[in-house]
Length: 130
Image (cartoon, rainbow, N blue to C red; front, top):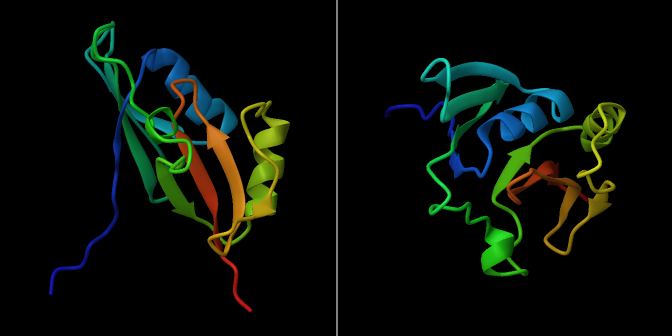
């Protein structure tokens, strides 16, 4: 069987440069590509084996993060990590005002939420094991 090696969601963003800055400066991702040059509308950011595609289309095509559609389904992505406390401290040191405190969820997960400038919410954490 073919092995799946990862997933890279595409987020439509309101401001590409602001989104890239958030992911790189706050969450420690790196810019892997942006195009076209000199006025990009598409970028890929990644950290380790976790990546995101970011695209600005136009003012008539706004972002549609899950929290804007339904407050109960507020995560747009789950990123599994073994030590959410360490990453939360790293993000806070980078000026992460859009980072929640590490907490346990009703779904049996431990981690924190990061909200990007377009309103997408990523949860960084892991299942709580008994």
